[in-house]
Length: 414
Ligand SMILES: *Cc1c(COP(=O)(O)O)cnc(C)c1O
Image (cartoon, rainbow, N blue to C red; front, side, top):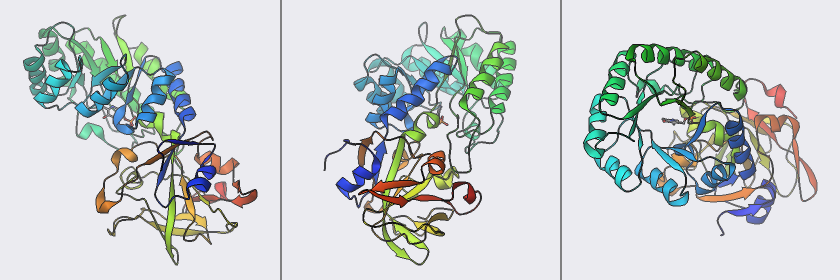
């Protein structure tokens, strides 16, 4: 079949392809809208964290919306950006890099922004690149944990004391410097950024060096079922207020590097039901493929059932959802409310699937989603389930709402 085919909406795609394999439905307009939201409102430079979804159509949508800066963590990501977007900048934001990766980044791809959180990493960069003027080495700080799906500061980040020393050492090598942090992905509390800025303030005052960059990372939350974050605008407002209290020089560049908040709503996933046993269904995607974040990040994506011939029941029941592999752990960690007559051959559109879905997919057991199409229709958000409860296929009206079994079912009920 043709890849990256274009359809008016998801139901037209299902009608045309009747796919027995998972299909990622990209919404370039939604991706661009998300990018413009950041570009217009974040009070600084906006990078996209490529690892979140490196599909070329996603990158192209962001580039077309005006994103020119990319947070990259591997040579493969750097190569993708350099080869496709000649005027875009790559920032090598992984605190642990192979010397050979630094060498290629420097000599082949002309990357000059690097992150460290330990002096041994600074030594590697200076050994390989020579350091000096024009080289930017940003120090990653560990920050206090707030309500977020992941605790990145458990893996990366210097303590304030270490950061003070590192900043001085970077400057002593003749490089420009800065501070970076990441409050953890799907951070549901904007106070995390404010608290991180207090750590930044302490470090700047003690180090007594001029910062060229302040990078407040990713972590900006997306909207999932029963997980509606405060508007991004209020996050930006908090960051703006806190930055204004910092002793920064006039030419210090404030940056952010969101992944999830830019891409989550821009992609949905269409799966098919391959077997039903009582109140369990077996679908063709799961936690080893696009849906690992149901387990690792504890997020719940909105779902709706699409049936081409005939209507689905108005009544809903809780279903256990198994993925395609032979592994018993390939099951969603919660039950989902679906029409009680959901059956083999039905499709399920799963919304908010842009972040850490295809990028995390394995090829375990010979299954791997690899089909991408673009659609014009607006995204399937948890809100879309509230306002657009039915869809029309072959001119018939269908009930399609589905939400996780526990919690606020009434809010979404048909
Ligand atoms: C993963 C990552 C990001 C993106 O994080 P989101 O929570 O998806 O916004 C940004 N910066 C770094 C260094 C990362 O590791």
